[in-house]
Image 1 (cartoon, rainbow, N blue to C red):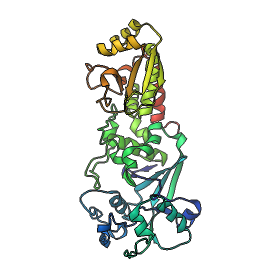
Image 2 (spheres, rainbow, N blue to C red):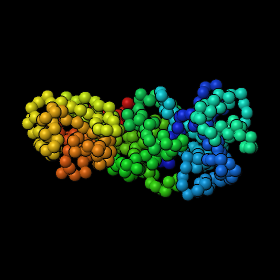
Image 3 (cartoon, rainbow, N blue to C red):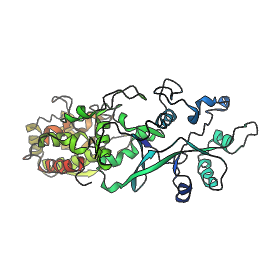
Image 4 (cartoon, one colour):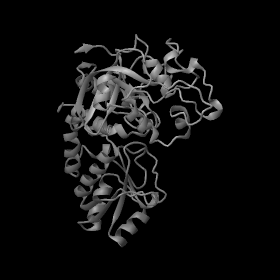
Length: 394
């Protein structure tokens, strides 16, 4: 394995106008289509300075920015710098695989070509007035050369998505990534202040310097993703390094802190069965925020006794509703402490951890999962995930 901590990974969006991988086209022009075709942002900005074109940007440590804020096209300019190409890889998801690409050269610019007609149809489908004016010459006043840009790449590896740990597989739909074209994985989890607990190796393997494109340090979740991708590409530090020295308790608590929302809902299923509730999944909507609805299989007093024993405090309103309707509802969140439901006083909030043990109507599974006697199904579910989180199936 390559013993180098400097590899970084950047999400490259697979979608109309961002990425073009049709087999016959990709064969002749091996690269990722750059949706930033130096397109003017508006008709009033039609004379875009050529110094802002991606291919003419300076490639110094900070010169790739066109302003003080790092945008997606700034990142593309940053990644094109020759000294960065080997260590800054692009990651693309499609419905079946995850692809890892290394940039091999400067932007490849082509003009008219028969194969471009299909690409133009894809762009045309976006129904953008300014793109029609610019690319299809709908407006005769615009005199800009028609050109298409591709990032030349070579494929390092592709992995079936079915092999990936669920939170890694699901980052393909992570909102922060999908809001742009090219985004660093190193910033994932920043907005939610997502911390990965009980793993002292996170700090050990965090990138030592602030990232020049964000002026922030790599997030906890960013460290984990980078270690996971390094494992797929046989690089260091990998998941074995991240796991080194952890106790079984550490492994279990760390695993919970990586869960995505779907895994939290599954954990809630097992929790319900452990305390004598029959759970069913509910498609949450903007009105009630309910993820899991459950019905008693035991007497109410038995269920309340287990909850009280484990310091889970329910409000009188929740208890009364439970007894009256013979039903109790849960909202599940993968991170954060603040309930988002408008009817939060009528739900139990199921979280990885509680902010305080005195929180009403709140369950933090990190406090419960080690109790195999009261919560055998929950414990077993999380225990089985510890092998997945560290890539033992890869």
